[in-house]
Image (cartoon, rainbow, N blue to C red; front, side):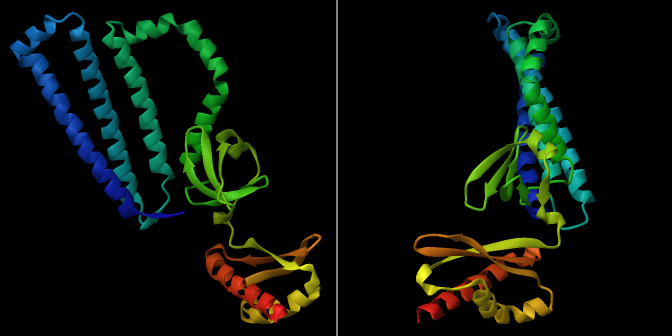
Length: 293
């Protein structure tokens, strides 16, 4: 679902302010560690503190560079988008990439804090790293597929999709899963591998979608499919003539001991769904009240 540029601009402004604060902290610590003799004497008098200061400077410096690259990329992207409405996947993707890089920087800084060199330390763990890569290959492919989803226009936040028998709205895309909120309100976590390897219907790319209405009536009403269609169809005549409704099918949802379930399927433009749903609710209530009377 497209979102306004102004929302992203506000978020970017807030992140820029945080960037300025981090930059000031880094400059203050850097100057203290390079030109303040009392501070340098205090650090040298504390065993291991020098490594910690170096690690903090490395962490802040690298984080500032990553944030700067993310801010510049985001601003260029927002400036190039001519439409006021845009999809947030690209910004989501660069945010996750910056998170991954910051995680790597944090681990490196932690190693440096113990007086070790990150490259030499990681080289000494080559066999262990290879074993971890084999064990976590599914997570790695999920992460790669997550980034592919973020940097392509196949799926976007707010899209209504159907995967297998599950249908709902995409609420979030992470490195591991796509978060889907189903029509019944439940939330599903769909692995990104499945999103790119299974047939998925994205209703954003269709000009028509089938909407299903379910309703139940007591069995003593003795209502038939033909009767329901004849009572509802005249109320939809204008929409049917103008092709706003391209399909109108009345079917049986199930027969139970005390009630009968009916379903009505209509083909409509996705953007007209809320309006037509409201109209159908009123039509069905009128039909049931008339039968009661």
